[in-house]
Length: 218
Ligand SMILES: [Zn+2]
Image 1 (tube, rainbow, N blue to C red):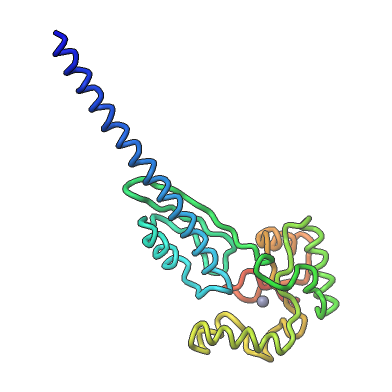
Image 2 (image 1 turned 90 degrees about the vertical axis):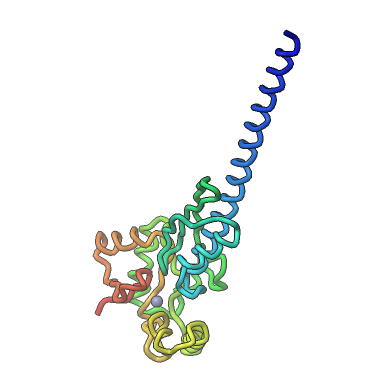
């Protein structure tokens, strides 16, 4: 009788033991998945900006893999300011979202970029920024020819091909930024678009692949 009882206790504790081990495994996988998700989201959003090479999806997949996870989904768009990823480690899925703050990496403070803008451009953008209540900001406004030349050279070096660089940066002498007729906006771009319409501002977005680039309408 006592022996049987002892046997039962042993069996129970073994069951309990294996249960604890399993829970521990899930916890480890969850922590690893979260780390991988954080890393992949950060890498994806950094890659999607002007400072990356324009391949957020493959960078996110690579970063997940380096952290022992598999990338399930990446809501990451070239030119976007946020990336959301979902990764899995041994069946345990975790998500992470990273947001890119242009101010954090740009030496140009928002507000300091309005200098050099065409007066009509300055008036339109100022109304837009004010109406947004701080949700929209100027990331890049007027650029000197020297600044545009530097951006162009960086893009050629990054993409290794002037034709590809053309898709991202206008050649020196051809950018509306150099004439004070363009701004790159940050923050809530969708709100900016709605405000342009609502306030009937003379602003347009001529380049589909640069949704943040606004020019003074002719
Ligand atoms: Zn622009």
